[in-house]
Each structure stands twice: as structure tokens, then as C-alpha cells.
Length: 203
Figure 1: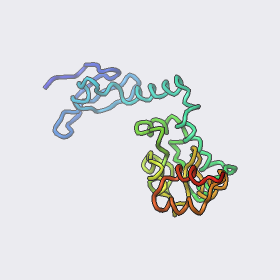
Figure 2: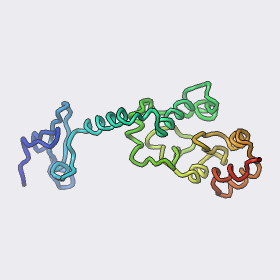
Figure 3: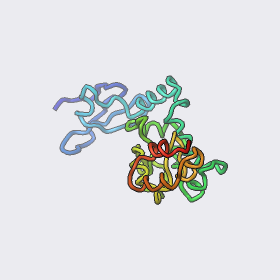
Figure 4: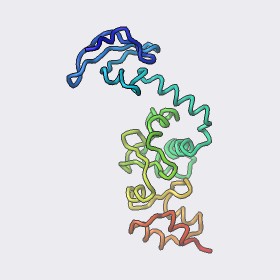
């Protein structure tokens, strides 16, 4: 056994052996920020191993947000839209979300937390989707999904997302002058609503 007591790994200083996990030694470490954490030798010695209690990742994420101006990005606008739908009584979609009891969790009231939780699987061609359509916006109930996956998960296929806007099929069709009856039949058969909106738009 290599004694790691007193050694530093990034911001972590190893203090003592605190026990075992899956037959591996656990080392009790103190982070420069004051927090303490138990880690296996593997987690510490690996070239890309743990370098802090988690504070480093948060700081990097915060710097990234500031550096790249995330308030102008798509993911920020998605988060802002979630808040409006759940909290803003004047938002046109409120009655379908906040108005029927759907909430955004306290953690996600802070954009940085939403970003940290969801950025790993984010892609510009995916939209935010609640796994339980009647559940809240929270880490355990949200995922990034394709348009088709999201449509299949909506209540009676009533909602779609088009050009970043989530609303009922009927309202989207009315807004973009599209033949509603044809579109809703095709959506129920599993076709992509974005392409249908383009196809059945009234000239």
C-alpha cells in the first residue's frame, strides 16, 4: 500500500485513511476551500483524477459562463423559457405549466445550477423534455430529447416545439398559417412536426 498521507492532489491534501469502499482504501482529504471528502487511491492517483471537493468544477463552469456570455446562448434561453412557463402569470404558456401545478425546482432557479446539471448531454438539435409529462422541471425528471421523442411524450400529442417555442399544435399552426388537421394526424403517426409545419404551410 502506498501511503498517501500528507500528499497533495490539486486542491486536496490527504489527511488519513478513513475506511474502505469495495475493498479499496478510502483517504480522507481536505480541500483548500475547507470542505472534506473521502476518495479512493484510484480517484486520487489517476492522471485525470479528482482535484478538489467539487469547487473547482463549479468555478470552471462559472468562468465559462462569464467568458462565453451564456446569457445569449440557446441553453440560457431554454432555461429562461422554463422559468417563464412555470412562474410568469403573463406568459402565454403559463396556464399549461405553472397554471396546472408544474414547477421548476429551487436548485434550477439559478441558471448556473441548471447549466451544470444539463450541459454534459446538451446538443443544439435537442430540446428539454420532462420524462413524466405531469412532473416538475428538476434533474431527475428532465432530459434532452429529439423532437420526435418529445412529441411522443406529450399529453395526447397536444404540444410541440417549433423554432424554440413550445405550445399546442393548434396555436403553432395558427401562428404560422399551417393546416392544423393534416399536421395533427401526421404527428400522431410519429412524423416530425417541424417538417410537417414546413410542408403544410398555407402559401
